Image (cartoon, rainbow, N blue to C red):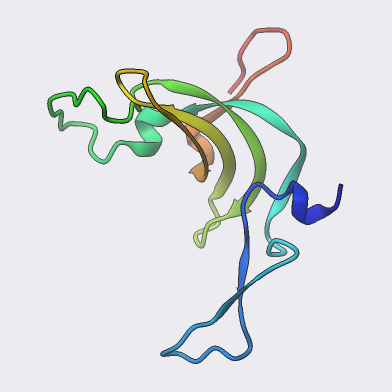
Length: 127
């Protein structure tokens, strides 16, 4: 299997024909050099409460068909990339469910390192 087929997300690179007022992006065959793939991907826990919640102190009424995020979800760690401040970001694929469990979607997103924890093969979780 070639490298582009294994990429968890599609990368686009600024085209040479770009101008400051008219950016042009073309699909890239490889991710940026600062991206480090995890091959094979590893199972992790993603704390969606911290990763998705806007404000830890504000609560609203639940919407029955809204997306759930008040739990940890099992995800696949696919790679690492540093943020502009040097903090590690994990590229993780995980599923989101609606509150009524009628719908789900699969998301691949960058999550700060401190919002994931590794799953061990022995069943004992590690941070």
